[in-house]
Length: 282
Image 1 (cartoon, rainbow, N blue to C red):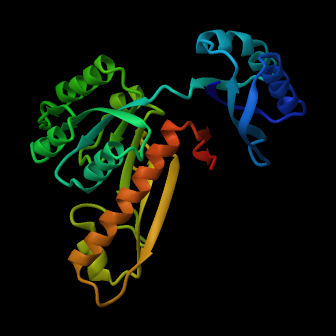
Image 2 (cartoon, rainbow, N blue to C red):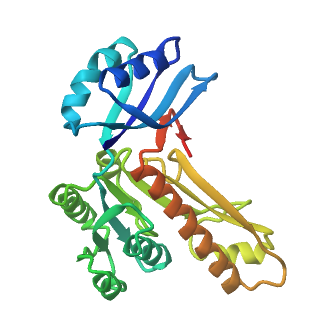
């Protein structure tokens, strides 16, 4: 049995599930898992179906077969080969906790993806990357060379047939052009506090203000800095007895967990965009 994943969103109306189920029946498909959501506010319907077929078929052939239903319901739809592992490029600067976590999870089989490279504007984690057998690309950047450096990132994306770019604490602001080129296939992680602290040493700022909750947010990258559609968030309680260094340690753990969840859900095709929000199927 060959397995596939169908994801779709469209204006909500009657007959969508019936049409999809009928198409699967015509393909002799078996539904392994199906999830759906109708958004009352946006009047859109979202669906993810994990199914199997008795004989392997090429994805383009399945998409051609599904085209009539796609057109009839004005769907944004995609069919994915469940055996194909997403190809991921990691970007990092000088904080390596998220990088190390993703490399370890991939190495131990916890993440169903292939990490095709690590790119950084510093050499701090070159040895770590190579220890995991992952090519390392040193791409230094200055304000004067930003366009050239970003062009090299896009060259890597094209050369390695990258499906997803992960900013694993990559401390550079991407240009509008790069954000547009990576739209829907770049995920960032950042700390999120109540209140929020921006700029350098955010955990030390939080400690100085005596915060009681720290957390992290994973979101898709857009030209609006840290304003992209949110995929996952988590928080941890802290207290007055904890130092700034302890807050940093706790925050780093939260960031790593939140980013790993977001990456997993993306490569498993569990995330659908709903305007500025996301629908994330379990």
